[in-house]
Structures are given as structure tokens and as C-alpha cells.
Image (cartoon, rainbow, N blue to C red; front, side, top):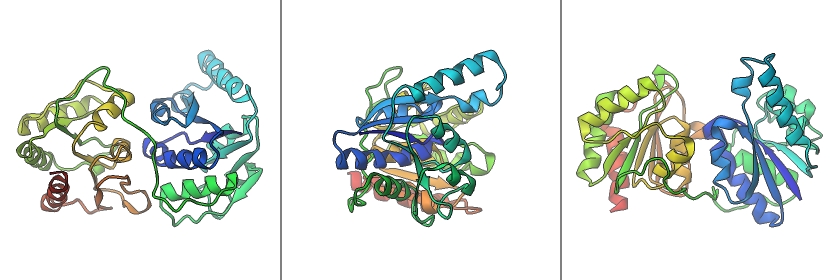
Length: 319
């Protein structure tokens, strides 16, 4: 059996789809699983031993220059890859019109949610097979239930198994022992005050952990340097997703904003706290096999004392 997973973005959503792969290969040990994903996040499914082949998609880049020669050539090359071999099932875990359109290019029956379950009901018309999965379920469970429904096995009663292990450090090795602080966010409304990050960093130093303050762009680097200077932490160079995975998988503690790296840290089983300042954790909160917690919500910037209490509880459990 050959299955193509279509889950292209964002990073947290890609992480949330990993347990579905674990379920598939457990139910069908000989199944070969490929994965269509945004190129920026391609290193995440590569961490799972059950994924045979990753097909990178650069739609976020291509849509800006759709009529450029290089873009058309890259899209044609991906189309050939999608058509190279037949699939027994093309499983769209994304549930969007764009993901359905990409899934239709593969050689195999396209399956997904029904109109009542899907994020964009128009996409359901593209599916040869549809399944009902409540939208009120947690994101990971929705992925697992959709895979079980279309691949003919009972939904496992076990907790989600992400199935990934941290890769070895390549570009930069973190100090040991260390903790990771992730003060990065896509919007200013998601940010948590810098002085609170510094206070957490000092708490980590007192616990014997060196804070590694990560960043992804110039503004975030400047913020990371201020936080690290205030708490005795370190700022790494720019790290790829694979290099970040190596750091997170070796950190004794992670505290991060509502970002994909926080979800990836939890997937490794590391103690993780997710701080939500402009979004409800709800059905997409921090989930993993280790100690995890989500705090805050829309218009609810968590107080330092509340986050510190969670951190002390996880540090205490670690000791």
C-alpha cells in the first residue's frame, strides 16, 4: 500500500499530523507513506521513520511569481513527482481548496473530510472519498480519526505517538544542560513582555539550565539578544528547522509563544509551556508525551507569576 499525505502548512499543523503517520504504519506495517509539505517545513516529516519520501512544495514563494519561467518550471517538476507513481490513497489532512487542488494532481483517489467537517466546504467536492470527523475535536485527534476512517482501521485508544527523535546537531551545538526560550511570534499581538522572559531566564539559570533564546528574523534576533543579556543566556546563529529540532530535542525545558517550534518541542517529549497572548489554545494547544501546559488566550496576556508557577512545577518534576 502507498499513501500520500497532503499537509502543507503551517509548522504546528504539520507537527500535529505526525501521529496519524504513526497510526498508519502501526495498522499497515508494509505501507509506504509519502508527504506533500511546504518546503520550509519539509524537515519535520523527514524526522519520522515511517515517512518514505517528502515532496517539498514552495507555494508561498510561487504564488508571488506565478507567471515567471522559473516558477512554472518548478511547479511542472512537482507535478511530475506527484504523477511518478500511483497511490492507493491520497489523504488531504489540510481540508483547504488549495490542498485539494494539489492532491488532485497525484495519481490516486483523493480522500478527506465531508462538507460538515471540513474547514473550507468547497474542497470536499474534490474528494472521491469523504469521512465525518467532528470539528470540535482536538487537531491531532481529527487527523488520526480521518486517517483511520479512510484506511480502514479502528481509531487507536493510545495517546498520540509523534514518532520522531531529535537529529544530531549540525550547524550549532547548544550548551548542556540548556533550556530553550522561544519569544518569536508572527504578529506583535502575540508577543509577551521582554522583562517577563528575562525573569524566566533567570529562573532557569538558578535551576542550572542555560537559556538558549532563539530567533528567526532581524527583529527577533535583537529581541533575543536583549533577553539573553538580561538573564545570562545565549543566542544561537540562525538555525534551520532541522537545526532547531536538534536544539529543542536536547533542551531540558522549553517555554515558547504560540509558534510551531513550541509544538515541535512538545512532540519530542520535552517539558514545554506554551504562552498564548492573542489566540485561544483550545483545540490546538501544546500536546506531547512529556509534561506540557498551555496558558493564556485571546486578550489574556498571562501574568509572570502564573507562568512561573507552571515552570517551577515542570522543573520540580524534572528534578
